[in-house]
Image (cartoon, rainbow, N blue to C red; front, side, top):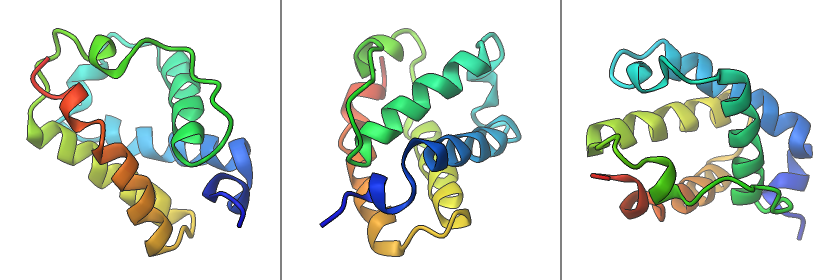
Length: 118
């Protein structure tokens, strides 16, 4: 069985999903302030590698741990849920099946404790 990553076209597709995802995120006042001093080009590249890995692609993510990346941000459940909502919308937009979305969001959800309240 091919991985989600292969099934949907690999990193090229993931990069498009990530671009769409960040357009939604940056339009959302619940979460966009977290990115106001962020180099978004670098952020998009990092996120593409991370999401590629989360979806069964090669692990090219060389960033810091999730806990370290989110340190000092004191993210709350409302912020995490907003990000998940936008990721779901982006995956849906690119024709990803419900089953594959549930799988991907399950992987993201497993990081919740590493991200919240840091």
